[in-house]
Image 1 (tube, helix red, strand yellow):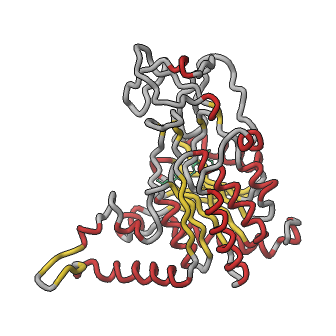
Image 2 (tube, rainbow, N blue to C red; image 1 turned 135 degrees about the vertical axis):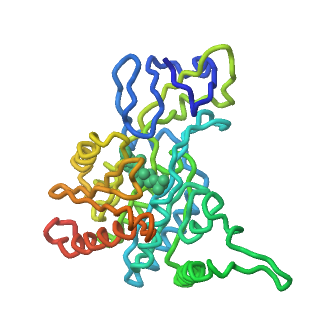
Image 3 (cartoon, rainbow, N blue to C red; image 1 turned 45 degrees about the vertical axis):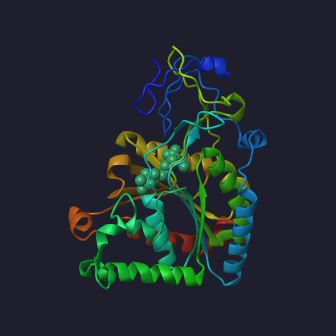
Length: 357
Ligand code: 9Z3
């Protein structure tokens, strides 16, 4: 039975648009979908993917920005972290009217970026367009709208006294970051934008060797419609149901770790909704890709518990109810320093793991 898309009932005969596979996947963020008929052919390689898809128009310009950012911070002796944040979309049409999206607001990425900046890292913040960003996230449109903090009188517009201290701190950090030039923000929308930009960035950042970290917190689609199977025009609502046939997104961590940036310290996130699957899936990712650490989290508890898994260790970071609800501590304030400690060890131990510059 085909699944309704985002709860709506988009009905269309997509076979007339060239999507004529025998497989009908239920679209999902993570790999729990089951083909309704034949076995999955598996994902295409990253190489095949890039050869058969068109790079986003902004890629060249973004590459230049990354290059000068990396050169400058390398010269100034700073470490660089690439933080990915927010969800990728999966367009259903080339001239896109509809797309599949996911829940991610980019809280993890935006919050973590602030802590990396505080610790002296230069941050390339690669985020979904309009998702949360460092600093402005405290006063975003969806949460804490800035208007709620303002008042007007005959003399002008002011921040209400109760909010001044917090806003002063955020503003000071924001201005200091701007002055230091330690934050580069780049955006993506679709899964295709994300894949091309990540590859480009990694190939440039690789010159940082062990001094680079990757913090892959974006919620990346697992399934997509390849360019050659996508309808050019808006899918028409005929008299049938909309059956979606989607391919698996290439496993990008593999070339990232092995080819594009083999010396960097790479942290990926694993998201599950079923607690029982999380350790297994996290370990599987580590083994499959050979990177340094997987941070496992469950959708509903992601703001208060994460598991840090490496090939030879497993630990947990957990906020108490008091820390979360009364002290308003953000779990990223614990995750980031722990990772920085491990990144330092990675740099010191480069002789042992053989990936020195
Ligand atoms: C995460 O697991 C992030 O922690 C969240 C953060 C997306 C849950 P929010 O943006 O949420 O703060 O609302 N990110 C990774 C998700 C993902 O797509 N991982 C892939 C997978 O699970 C591997 S790279 O297969």
